[in-house]
Image (tube, rainbow, N blue to C red):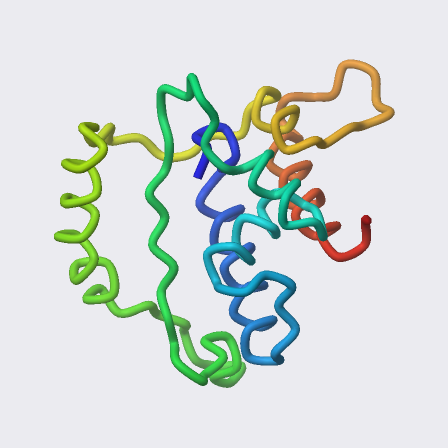
Length: 154
């Protein structure tokens, strides 16, 4: 996924949750979870537009390898009001070798960084606002709103 397309861990987990709910309800627009995740991050109903926005482009220097945990046929957030939702650590640890192989194949290196919301990221995803000189502290909210609009736009 394009480096600037990720605003925060909250942004990524929100898109993941939306993806899993759509998958369980058989309401995905994309043919697979990877495509659907990019579509949601991109805030569009169009698959082609999603890849143009959140996919890699010639000249990109950084990218994210995103692991999308699978809960099978269960909704991870439908476990009861008093239960804590936990994604098993093995889910990520088991994917480490695959991520290392992918980095080797791409001749890339791991950069220990968390995603941060940027105006460049919003621009890349096609987010537009009528607000003049938007407050930088609202950037993460703009990413979340944009993702939520994925099925409301053409």
